[in-house]
Structure formats: structure tokens, C-alpha cells
Amino acid sequence: MLVHRTVAFLVAASRRFRVLLILCLFIFPAQRIFALSPQDIVIVFNANMPESEDVARYYAAKRGVPFSNMASVNVSSSETILRSDFESNMIPEIRPAVIRLKKSGKTPAILLVYGIPLRIKEQAKITHDNQFNLITENKVKEFQNLVLNLSYELDQVIKKNQAANTTKTAPRIDDSSSTKNILDRANRSLLKASEYLSASKQDKRNLGNNTRAASILIRLGGLSPIAKAVFKKVLSNAGKGAQFILGNDNLLQWNAVLEQQLVEIPFRGVLPGEAQKVASIIRMVNGLMGELKFWDDMYKTNNKKMTSASVDSELTMILSKPYQTIKWLPNPFLKNFDKLPGISRIRENRVMVGRLDGPRPELAKRLVDDAIAVEKTGLSGTFYIDARGMKGDSSYSKYDEHLRNLYKFLKEKSTLPVVLDNKSELFPENSAPNAALYAGWYSLGKYVDSFKWKKGAVGFHIASAEAKTLKKPGSMVWCKRMIEEGVAATLGPVNEPFLNSFPLPDVFFPLLMSGKLSLLEVYFQSAPFLSWRLILIGDPLYTPFKNNPAINLESMKNRVKE
Image (cartoon, rainbow, N blue to C red):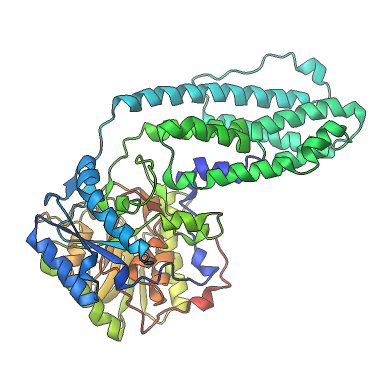
């Protein structure tokens, strides 16, 4: 692909982030992001529920969180909140507390407790959404035509008898055309052109056609390093005018400046009012192909009804500038982004958020009691992994493979006993005693009572709605039932999250088992997205293997990334 990597990063994030996390921790030993402490935590409770404040004060006393770090919000007892109420009744009360800690030199994290709503309700489309849909649809058609015609023209220029071929009628888009197909065709043209220009002799007979080909290549691919290198080679003998442009690497310098402006955009998305400005930068850096992909992605995103989110995940953006609330945003805390220019500044404007919650206040309190008790002796027991025996190239098969990879790795590197079920059926009822850790799937909204949980147990079930309620009587969703049955920490979605939003088990659990990171830090080093639909339930400071690590991360340095 000749289109610069920034395009792929910016406009194909929803696909790329499915694999960004794969075994990254096996290359580098994990490091603390924040070294989370009790003084860093802002505890948020519901001012309309005495039980909520009681849980908040209980946690503060147990963990030594200053009572001045507590923030009350005026919300209903419902598990769902309107976005307007979230923005007017929650943000103004929580943000000052977070900023106050930040100004005092802390790195604040937020803990929501029993009584705080779980999810932000989906918004109905409004007039300006429909208007923006029309704009983006027209832009997609416009740039499909431009890219298709230029790639066709580039093909003609590099043919030996170009003069006879350039008079042919260029293709036009039709109803069967797709952006993907057009970009695939354009990439083939760019590859052919680069090979031709690299092999072409630099003499006066070729200069005119080579210059024309390089010009089209630049328009299609932008100022990418490959395009610039080809352009420089072609025009190396073209005279002082070209040398003035290329001799001092102005193009690369301009490209670097523009690319820096693009770095932050994926982490807060693109608002309709910013689209034209962002598109102009993308065209300079990544050419017409990049701009086509940008408009196509904007059109597809804006047409999806995906504005609901968990309250927890939405609060991670509390310090950021206005951001896109349709769909998800990438999580900058992932180790994959460590070397990204400006990532420290982006991370400083994001806040880790966890939840101490459950069907009843006393169960929420138990989560911290169990965490503190187990930290003293260390978590022990058996790790149960429930894969499905899936094979193939589907996203489901690949996630299933991560469960098997986790099993293989733990058998080699961990001191904890591990049991793998690689059949489509789940562990049968009452078949998993002494359960300390668990990862598995797939029983949608129907907990299977297979486990006898050890105090302090941590686990999660990969399914689409396992945290849609923590309080509804009779509900069998996994997060609610696991808390009722004794686990100390779990995670799950409040609404359909899609498979790529779950932490990869072979990232999450080795980090946890190293004993070097708290529960909240482990989650934010492994969860792919923010401003989305998952929640983490448990004491954020819980470090179950602090005094008895079950994995030595130093032993993973030489493990090859898949």
C-alpha cells in the first residue's frame, strides 16, 4: 500500500484495532501507567440515594481515599440516563474534582459507586445529522470519480504507447462501485507506477512522461515517503526549479508538520464542523485516496445509530476537547501507542474510570473487602478458560484462538493451575471448583452455574449484554450473577459492543497475574476503546497477585508478536 500509514490509522481504525493489542506485552515488560494510589481517586455517588453515599464513604474509609475526593451528582436511580442529563447533571460536578486533583500533581481516576447509572441512552438523529449525511455522500461520489479517473490516467501514462492510449474514455463510477474496490484499483496503479519510475532511465526522452506520472502519483498518494522518494528520483535532473523544491527536503518537513496535526484526531474523532478542515490536511498528507477514504468513513459512521455508551467509558473523555460521540474512540493508554508523537499529551487528557457496584449495596462493599483480604495472602486457585474449538479466519475464530494462546502460555509460564475447555459447550454446571480466574464464551445473557468462586476471583464472559443490568431481579446476565455468586471483579458491556471491544484475554490476564498493576490499570492497558460500551466492576486498586506473582513478565521479552 502506497497510501501513508496515517491514512490507515485515521480512517480504518475500526478494523485495525481488532489486532493492535495482540500479544504486545510479550515484547516489552509491562510498566505502570499511573501507579494508581488512593489519593488519585475521585469517588462519585448519587446524591439522591443514601445507599450510594454509604458505599462511597465505605470505600473511602477502607482504602484511605480522602473524603474531600468525593463528588455527588444529582441523577435518578435508573440504570439509564439521557445524554442531556449526563452532560448537565454529572459532568459539571465531576470535572472540577478531577481538575483539582490534577492541579495538585495527582493523576486522577474516577470510581463510580452503587447508584450511578450504567448507560447513556441512544440519541435520535436530528436535522443536522441528515444534512451532513447528504454532504458526505456527495463527497464520496466526487472523490470516487477523481481517484478512479486519475488511476486510469496513471495507467495510460506508464504504457509504452501512451500517446495512443490517453484518448480512451476514462471509467465512471456506477451503483456497483465501492470505495474499497476503487482504492484497491488505485493502489495497483500506484504500485505499477512506482515500479516503472524506479526502473526508468533518467534521460530527456523519458523526463516529460515520468514527470507526469510522478505528478499523478503525488496527487493520488499525497506526500507519503514513497511518493516523495519516487518524485525526487524522477526529477533529480529536471533543473534548478525542481531542486529548489526538493533539494532541502521541504516536502518532508511540510509532511511532518501536517502529520503531527493528524495524530490526535483518531483519539477524539471528527465532528461535522471540522470535517472540511481535516479533509484538507489529509489530502496534503495522503492524497486524493486518503481523502476519499476519509469521507467514506465519515459517511458510514454518521449513518450508524451508535451514540449510546456506558457512563463509565464516556467519563474517560471528561477532560478532552469536544469529541465524536458516534461509535467508539481508540484507547490511547494501549502500549502500542507509546512511541506515537504527542501521546503523553493525549493520555493526560483522558481519565481511567472504574465502578464499585452490584445488585445490592452490601455486595458492592464486599468487592473491596475481598480485594483487601486477598491482597494480603495472594489469589490462589484454578484458572478456567472456556474456548469453543473454532477454526478459520473469522473474527470469532481469531478471538477463540486468543483463549487457546492464553492457555498455552500459562501452561509454560504460570504457576497457577489452568484448565481449558475447547468444545462448543460451556463448562457443565458444578464442574469448576476452586475458580480463581475465568475467561470464556458464549452464553448470551444466561449465566451457567459452573463455578465455585474463590474469594477475590476475577473473570469475564465474552458476550453482548452481560452488564446491561446489575439490579434487575431475576436477570441472568453474567456480570450480575458472577457478583452474586462471589467474584471480586468482572467486566462486560451495557449494550452491544461488538467482539473487537473486549480486552484480549492473553493480554488482560498476564498483566493482572504479574502483580505489577492494579485492576484498573490492567483494564486500561488492554481495553481497545473509550467512549464506548464496556464497564469494569471491582475495586480499582485491587492487585490480587501483588504478593504472589503468578507470571514473571521479564520472561516474556523474547516472545514474538503475532
